[in-house]
Structures are given as C-alpha cells and as structure tokens.
Image 1 (cartoon, rainbow, N blue to C red):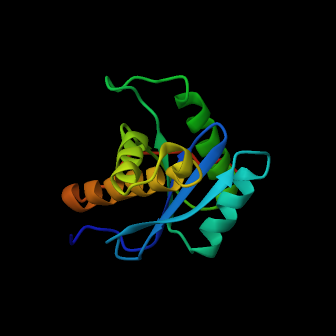
Image 2: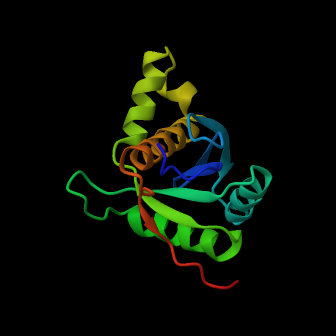
Length: 155
C-alpha cells in the first residue's frame, strides 16, 4: 500500500436516467454511497459540486464494457459524460472498467432483502460504490491508478 495515493475519490456510475455517486475516505479503505443524481442538464454541475464538497483528488467514472472488453451502447455516453466532467471539474478524471458493477449491486441489494423495485433509487449509488471499491483495490494491489485518464480540456 506504500504506492497508494492518498485522498478522497468519487466513483460515478453513469446511467441514462440516473447517475450514482460514491466516495471513499482519504486512505481509500472504504467506498460509501453519496447520492443519486437525476440525469439531466444539471447532472455534470451536481457531480462537479460534489467533487468540490468532498474535496475529491480524483473522479472515477465507470466505463460500461461488455464481457469481452468491447464498447457497448452505453460506452460512448459514459465517455462523453466523463469528458464533460473533466472539462469543468478542475481535477483528474479516469475511466474505469465497470463490468459487473451494476450486476453486483443488484445482487447485494437482493441479498439484503430489497426488491428490484425498492432498489431502483439506490442501485446506482451501490454500483458506484462497487466500481470505486474495485478501483481502490486495483491501485492498492498494483501501485498504479485504475483505468485510463480523461484529457482535461480548458473550459
């Protein structure tokens, strides 16, 4: 863990209707849910405000790839959302492989006794927790940040 970069991070699970947001402690020990943001014209602004509020050193956006590691219909959308965040957030943004994060989130919620209907409002947060925790674990294991950086273009 000596190569782990200290600082809070935000995990972002981008969906068509909602965006799940998670955060971690400065030591990267535990990812926890923050909120579900409605996917509308203000979504990027809200995520950016949360990054500011949590003093995030980095924003990790889930990249939905298929099981073969190829782009899906949602991949371009997630890349565009991440690029917009990178343009306005003033902090590093990385795209991280989120294969199975939503599946894992649904499974965890089912195991806790929640129905799919009652989980709808929080599944995006749980998926963000899963992808953030996976990214933290990768960095701790390898000593390198998970995912790929999103270029920061001036606003």
